[in-house]
Image (cartoon, rainbow, N blue to C red; front, side):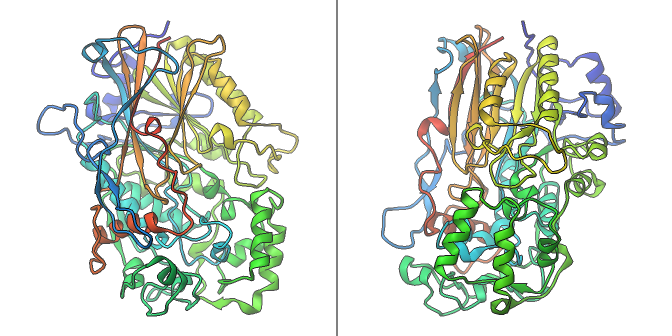
Length: 585
């Protein structure tokens, strides 16, 4: 049977010794250590010779709370046909779910916290001037171009500020242990975006601009009515049909330098398809795309018939290597707009992604590498295990398929590693939390990894069944769908099981993250608490306020009004703020 101890109790000797070496033997440090692909803590390298404290404890004792969460208030707008202004709306209540186990009365008085952390997902920090972006497909899919995306960095910084202001875990009052990003941290596999992401998370000054350092050179000052032209009096389609405002100075403010304080607790990173693949869907390594990314031409409009053909191909996975996309760009070379070339827009490789995370300049509150280790870099693997707390193990998977397409899978080598980690966790009596970018339903892409010819790929249905066979697994936490959804998975024998927790993105409305708490009810059950949070930006906007907080508020309101955006991404009430009960052991 698994041992379950509160995180408020002393750690085992080997763990205490490790933390003592870094001066971090406090609960408020909340610091796990990364385990290399083989599962060895030692392979993570020597501990940094400094304290890796996650956050300063609050002045008053921690207690359950709602302020700063969607249990207090949620951005909302009155009904209307045109552009709608946001304000503070009614809170989302907590829903108790008993799909896997019936909750027992009196558990509130018995429970102790095992761990608490925050999930970020699908930040999509966007280099909006990048030549490879396909905004001209907007007529086919709302995800091709969003009116808010020039403000993605300001929005992400405001999310960091929200987490820094939280008093701890809303239900158990446990200190928060870490933040995990579950992929699509960047939008177009660009070095510029990776730099912005790492500085957003660990702190630094960010100029969300490439090309001309003085001027914006993207679709929003193109004069094309297909896109919202915020600075211009032009009656573009968004102003005419949807009531979008004119905001003089918007684009200059969008590319101006801003500052992120960085998270004040440790953070870990999981990779997504937009981090690995050009456009989030094409196999990497094509020299044409690499050269085009840093070059001086950008396609901004395309006839409707061609737009439909290219998007249908992407959606159906019919062009995983991007041959049709490459041909399209070649055919329309003469109709492209001249932009300033910039090497910062170059694609990054998996090894460069790992090296950037391991760069001491981006360590912030730690850990070094944010889960990735020198062993990962040597093997060029992007999956790892890490110690969450005394009795909880975290496992971060790489579910992107290097063969191309935006759906995912995992390779046979990673699957063998995962099985070994789960078996070892069961022997130790650990609980396990699994993190990935893709959901179980979006892992249907079994294309061969070009780097591993002949290796079998494994999909979401197989992975979901594997996790259900291992009793230590409590939850599979992911993103990709941009929608809140919580799914129960029963154990193989019809008992036990785990919860799959999919969280909405931070690029599309409602722009959420999640606090997740694990508690032992001391009655043969555990409870997972999920609480959605918004960024620190005010709900109400002011079109004349182009300060950093004002831009973050606009980021949310523009996403709410984005034409064609899905209105179901908040999910149902039982996909948002919940108590998820399951059997212990």
